[in-house]
Image 1 (tube, rainbow, N blue to C red):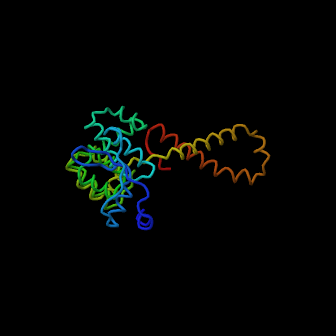
Image 2: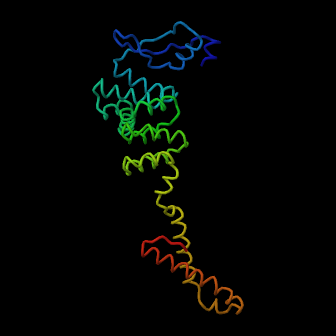
Image 3: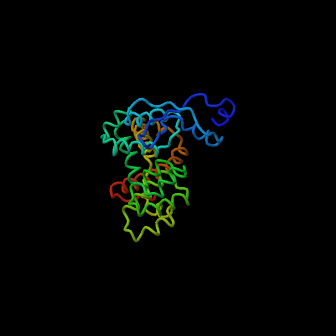
Length: 258
């Protein structure tokens, strides 16, 4: 945009809404405004939005969602303004913006529950909206230390969510040790379970084995040479012992070490 404006000038006006005595608020044209500031331009062509303030705030989100010229936090701030200042319910805001109420609720919750430090990191792009939403689950006083751990150890969104859940479960006095070594704390408190996909594959193999063994006539095996039959005995015994250990572990709800 800066290169375009330097070469061709401003091709389209920015869209602004009147704020009474406070002047005007840009609704659409944030890239043009930032490029103009970098180029040292003293002014921009502007078109005044004809609708009321509610419509102007809704238009700000509509017009800038596709181009991604405002952040998720800025959208949340606009939604907060519609909710607090324009007295619209979350359902009304969702209808106006053509979004689901849960989307409005999530953005509003993040804006209102984030500490100033986390909010600043979100605005600067140092953390994403998913991480911010997880940190917002913590009290304001606990968010700063958790944020420091996320930044220092480069925790993923999933790791951040698990860290937040762990902090919520543990007493306040234990939080210092957790955020000082978050990955070790997460590993220590992780319940190891077979992945769902691995469980499904195991079940499929067991069923196939059962069908194959029970539907194959025994006389076929009896016709094998003696050496082959003897070679099959050892792996059958090992499989039988492993399956017995697995069955015992499942029935007693204890982890299987075999």
